Length: 315
Ligand code: PEP
Ligand code: MG
Image: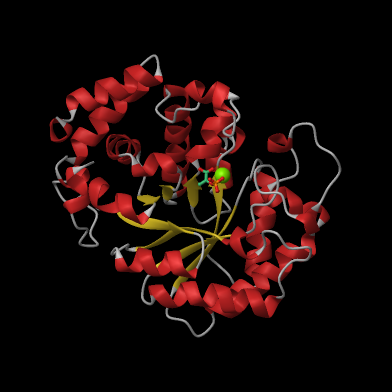
């Protein structure tokens, strides 16, 4: 990683034998989008929209949202931006969405689940996204966080369609969604795996709690099997599956994810050059072989060590 800061990213993600992998950026506001564009990101794979909503007693107006989203879309003219609808609740509480006391907020009303009681907030956001996208030469994909069921995905896709937003996908960050990804992707046009939450829920280890941090490891074969199952679902329906959790920014893990069938990796812009370099030094067959080794491991440590030892570029 020390050497890597000297590396530059030329905007192209591919394995040594030319298998293309979209390398995208995670951004949270217009200034991060500018930094991502400057770093050469091929697009935005995760635009977290929470920034405009935090610390507010009321949701921002539609006009306010349109202006903010447009400032991100403008940075990626001719490219793609995957914008995620509000992921409120749990680690991101929002006063205007206050709900009843929850003993387990991570298992409570968060992400898309808030739309059951506050459909107006989601509807306004979709209105704003559609307006912001209008007249822009940016490919805008919309994505819902914290989807657990096929019905939720179907409902979200239908809502997006009513707003003239045909590219509607879901985050796969709950094990149930990973396991029925084939059904979900019969409705959604894409999926993006959120490995941060997927790891939390697969391992039953709170991502905010240091005392269980040793369990929160996306290298765990249980997590990787869920990613593999999501990719299998995507292949069944001919839909792309990406990863936008922190795992995508770890070069050796990125190789494994590509070998599992992931088509795009979205990460903090400063990780792009490192990930691109390791991919460029590894063939697609090698990615597949390393993914199989990781899946067959019995622990996260075992998977990590096995893959790192077999990746000469990291030696
Ligand atoms: C994730 O859960 O992996 C993710 C990308 O979403 P967030 O970190 O915003 O929960
Ligand atoms: Mg998440």
